Image (tube, rainbow, N blue to C red; front, side, top):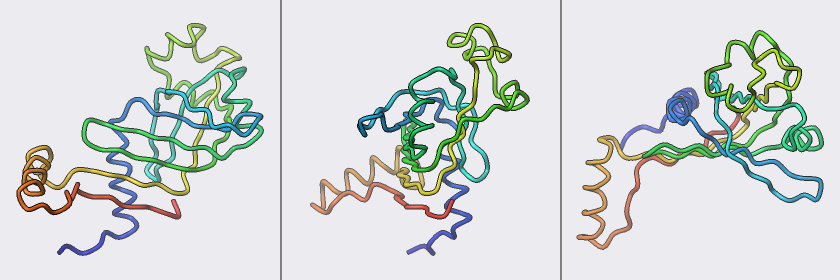
Length: 166
């Protein structure tokens, strides 16, 4: 049995698992308290697992964040999944907006990063949970699935950790 990962190792793994996930689901609460999720192009993940998104200033999600900044974000790749909770803020930072802008952002905001309607959403994660395959990737996952079927024991799907105090 391996040693438990330190908090710093868990955060580093969390950042590693999220860096290749280009699309995230950002969940906010609307004016009636209903959860509203929508796909967002993730622009950046800081070393402390904070997330950055570009959006329109006059969007519903910005209004939701202004009323209740607590959000959820889920990300996934072909073999790992991450769920984050945290606090979102709307950030007017033209330099950061230019830094994160890319050709795909133009499809949503064709006026470019200098548009008065372009704004950033920064999500400061406070807790996360991740699921990743066992060391060895897909082959190890397949072996674990076969082992589970043969032995009748529950599948050990790899690494699942809750990371707090982000």
